[in-house]
Image (tube, one colour):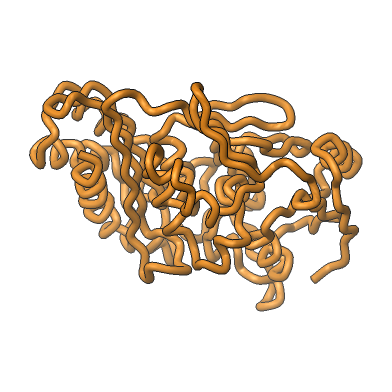
Length: 326
């Protein structure tokens, strides 16, 4: 691992100032479950000159529910979210997503902000420098995505952004999308639908180089809203999702008035299945509605030779998650 300066920030303002000082050549660390592996493997063409510790900032770990909804501090651990009685009762999809992320030890360290800001997990992008040199894929400024003609069994089934077909790896992201969350940063408030991006090189979010997440806000559930989260992975613990799904469905028990459906592990960004949402509106809470929504969710799929199986898997998971919520 290359050397770097380690800085314990005391305030958000100090952390931002330090990021400004290094002008894009610094990284932030909270739980470190993603960053430390990336540092060890040397995946970045330009290694960071400084690591700014955010865990040394007090007051960024909390779960509060008020009249406007839920507020979660950026440094709140996934364990705290999974075990929160308030989150489990009123924001079930988020609690279940946090509980299904990684292993107990990693959830004790990993934060909610870190989970939604993590790097993608493509094995070409993550190829360790020590095993023969990093691979200059499209995400790193290269001309091609080696996964397109290579091993793409876990990659995007909805095409590429900026030539890259790596998928977003977060479990909590689809839950936050389904719940219509807002991401509050040191600069602004960002609707979760606009937070993720794969259009600007290696970035997975719209955060500027000197911007950090400070809080995640989830609006209070509408009357009659039910939420659910499901995940398919090779192992229940540790593994990233092959496909995961979160839904928030609002209705009066017989008819659906609104729905938000998000599938992840299938595209560069969490995939908002708007086609499935439209299908569900004004329909009954039944298996036929879920089946129609599942088909609509994957209608635009463009799988590659090795990941065609993910289309059926995503369809089935959307159906199961909707039925779980209903």
